[in-house]
Structures are given as C-alpha cells and as structure tokens.
Length: 219
Image (cartoon, rainbow, N blue to C red):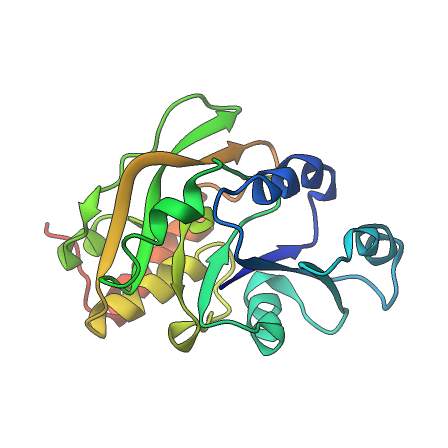
C-alpha cells in the first residue's frame, strides 16, 4: 500500500486534473491524503475540497501549519503505510506510474521517474536516469518532486522554502540511501506563473544545502 501526500495552499483549480490522474492508476493499492494549510480553520477551501472525502481519499484541515515543509511533516502523522509518494496539485501522473515504480522500490530507497514539462514550457528536465550516482547531487536536484516514491522512515522536510525536497534528497544521499529514476516519462510537471522555479533566492538556498552536506560543485 502507498500513502500519497498532496499539500494544498494555492492551485485548487488544478485538482480537477491531478486527482483523476491518481484515480486512473493501474496500481490501485493507495490512499490519498490532501492537507489544506495556510487558511483559518474550516475555511471555504477546506469545505470545498472535503467534498472529495471517500474511503481512499482523506482531506485534513491543517490551519496551524505554514508552508509546504510543515504541512508534509504534519501529514505524516495520518499516513497508514510505509511507502510514500508526492504529487503537487498542479502536476499529473501517467496511469502506469505507481505500477512501474513498484518494480524498483525494493532495490532502492528513493525511486523517481523521467518527466515532461507542460503549461508554459514544453520540454523535458535534464536529469540522470536509471541508477543515480551520489555525485549527481553536487550538480542539480535529480528527483522530480511529484515523481518521488520513498519510505516513510526516511521522510522529514526541513523548512527551506522552495527547495525542501532537494535538501531531503541530499541528506538521504549522504546517509547512503540509493536512488533510481525510471527512464519512462511518468509525470507531467506543470510550469506556470505561480511555479517555484529557479529564482535567485532558491539558488542561494541550494548553495547553502550543498555546503552543509559538502556537496561542493567542482570549480
């Protein structure tokens, strides 16, 4: 079984695309946890998304959390299963995403997939495929956030806005965890005006993460 985490602050309008992409998975053994953060208790956003509550989908009101990291950490308390996946509300999974990843997760600690941009871009990220060498973390974030499958025991997000996923992957890589990217494009990653994408602030945070874990890029 897999627990899928989807924190929501902005982007509720994209749920009509991301949610069906979960429902269409050929691997059906999952639960979806949606965490509403940054709003007052019992907000209109929470009430509206609560309409999706079902046996497999649970919506949580998390008014005391701020930001993605706090929300994800709070959601861990409600997960039932040892395997986790992430899906940002504005991204989309291909139907065989979970089924294909399950073939690899017994041999690796973190399994991502190839992806394609859509929206304001129509190309693919340049990321390593198949087994990921630890040295790759010196250069870029090799795991697309919405593609990640990993173990709950390894999950904790530091509060580093916009690059909290990269910090966790670096921490796990330095700890000796093994990473793999499925070569098939199994995720569509939306780029739009509200996307967190390569800002000067993020670049400084990335530099700090690399210094913290001695992942210094060669000169």
